[in-house]
Structures are given as C-alpha cells and as structure tokens.
Image 1 (cartoon, rainbow, N blue to C red):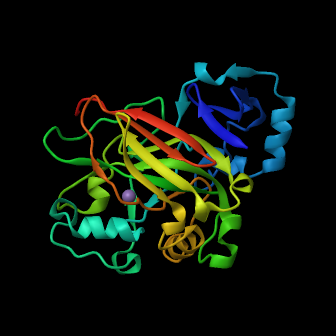
Image 2 (cartoon, rainbow, N blue to C red; image 1 turned 90 degrees about the horizontal axis):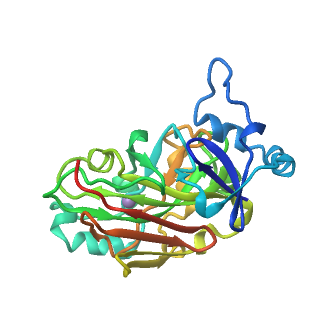
Length: 284
Ligand code: MN
C-alpha cells in the first residue's frame, strides 16, 4: 500500500489516481504516556487495521487535488548515513568543498549523523536554503521508515522492522561545521510523495534512483551499490540507537551531488516508490 499524509494531517491510501481517506479509523487521542516515536506510525504498523479502514472508507479525493505532506509527521529521529556509495566517497574525496580536508574511508569509521525533526517537509512545501552565499547540495536517498520498536536488531531480522520506504532529499550545506548542523536547518529534509509498505518492495537493495534539477539529470544510480545495504544499516543504527515506529533512516546518496539555487525545481525518483518534486525558494 501507498500511505500518504495529505491536506494537513489527513491519512490516506493512494489507489491509482485517487486518495482514500482513512483518517477516521485512527485514534487521534494518544494514550498517556505517549508511546515513543511517531504516533501515527505507531498505529499504521497494524496493516490489517489499515486494510479494514480502506474497505470501510467512503471518502476519495483526486490525487492531483490533494496537498501531500511528509509521510511521517513527527519522527523521533532522522538518521543519516554520510558515505554509503563508493562513487560518492570518490567524488567527495576529490572535492575540497565537500571533504574540507578529510579523506573519507568507511561508513563505520565515520559513523552516522542525526537530522533534526524540525527540518522535515513534504512535497507540498518549498525548500528554502539557509544561506544565499553558501553551496547547498541535493542528495537523493532511499529513506527507510521503521515500524517496530527495537534495539540491537540482527541483520537477518532487520527488514521485518521496516514499515515502508519513501524518497528522501538530504539537503546539505557544504562547509566545515558538523554534518548534523549543516543538514538540519528547516526544510533540509524532504520526504515523499508517500510511504510504500515493505511488502511491495521485495528488494530494497535493487532500486533505481535518480534526480534532476530543472530537467537536467544530476544523479542516477541503484541501491545495489549501497555499501551498507538496508538490512546492515538497520543493524548498525540499532546497535547505537533504539529505533521507534516512524524513525527514518536516510541510506546515503550516490554520486552526482551538486548545488541548487532559488527558482530551481528538483525532481527525484525511486523505482517502485514514486516521484518527489520540490521547488527551491529564496533563502530565509
Ligand atoms: Mn546524505
């Protein structure tokens, strides 16, 4: 199923060119204490309940008339993998504006980073660079949304902890500050257009992904080139952080990163998931 959040916090399931509104099947008064993670994702992990909600809903909207929000509203954390494609490590090591004098080697030598939840926007929003005079790059990435609370997950069990997958943009200011600072301003995390449940993505490690700016292709790769594949990345992240429903893991960007400017249009695509498009606004 393709699960979306639309028209300001309605929950929907995309059915071809329509959105089935299932919001009324869900509990909008969380218990006390509120469970860790995203409250909507906590409930969406019950796929039988979701299918039941779809069958009982009588409200459909034309997809083209809806405003799509980020498919997760309040992730407890957004985890990033900084160097997870060999060709991106090579381009980063060859570009002093990206590497700042560091020579990148292995992911587990550099570890992960966290993006602020407040950086998150969806397709109906606009990306606004923080600076007018500093390079700010696009990074297209497969984004994994967690469905179950767990820590120290084994690679063999990792995919059973996934709620679904979406397209992610890890927008990044280049410079010498720590990654978590440069990747966390408002609007610097874009997710969408929807969450595709993991049962519809049998091989997350074999998905074509690409990104273009103003119609000109900048990035094209396949998740088979991930150094830490999805399962290994979940194992690695959960060895440091307990994962909760709604947590997002950005799996890293392939080669071809480059700057964007006000007025640009970014179009990202991942096979079996869909298209995520966003405009670049004026710096704040
Ligand atoms: Mn990235």
